[in-house]
Length: 68
Image 1 (cartoon, helix red, strand yellow):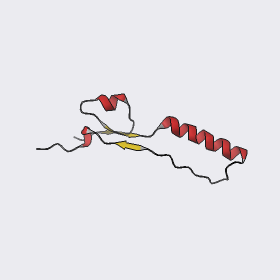
Image 2 (image 1 turned 90 degrees about the vertical axis):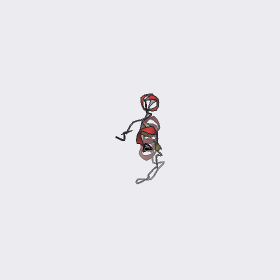
Image 3 (image 1 turned 30 degrees about the vertical axis):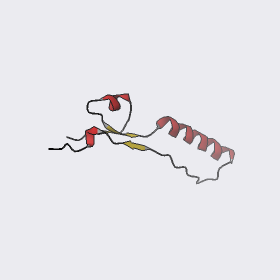
Image 4 (image 1 turned 90 degrees about the horizontal axis):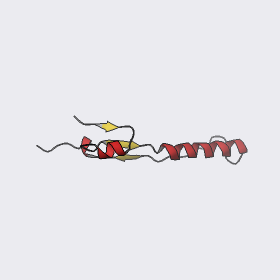
């Protein structure tokens, strides 16, 4: 069975085997959203402004095929 998580953290990194996970960087995403909202409300950013928020896939042993 292959296993992956939508949340990364110490538990996924330290599991046996380590679990593949997506790091959505929620703290940075929230800060970026708040910053953009402030800019939109103050008129510093035009309506329709978009920002790209990078995420990371940490591929670990839980999703690697085992050799026979």
